[in-house]
Length: 246
View (cartoon, rainbow, N blue to C red):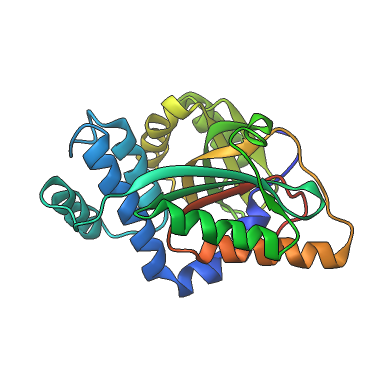
């Protein structure tokens, strides 16, 4: 897998995630609840969307008790709010492509917030399809190896045996890519072999990446990403900024 490593992005986010664990749990919990209500019930064996959400939750260290509680709650009454999944696309400074996945109970509020962020930091919110053609949906599993204990050839062999489509290493971490439909099966197979994950999710992966050479534009782009990630309605943010978080 050539090009860009997710590891640099993840390293910067680790402390932020740890300090905002409650918010992370809340966002993932909302995804699980939606998956139960819209994906065909509370049994992950027959609900692939729920199965993927559980894999993501475990990768983010959400306790099993929390996961089970969320599933049970979603199977009964909801919290009185109706959430819908909406995806927004736009451009950041220097034409960086950005995709924002949201779960919201008020689409007008969410759209206004996102438009404000893009405008404030030198970008613009676009129309559906304006950047998504530059991305491909893939399962992405990241295995940490900062201590160097894992053997790259063995990890690659296990990943290929599990059904991955691509494998990348930068020394500190291994990145395993899958078809979206195979994501949960690959996660389970690697878990069964004793691997633990820094992150595991179905993501929008860009075909190519764009660097920002202007320092002021880079600062604005980072502030845009931070604002998006801090918004309670935003579930995931994907972009093709080459130098992000390095």
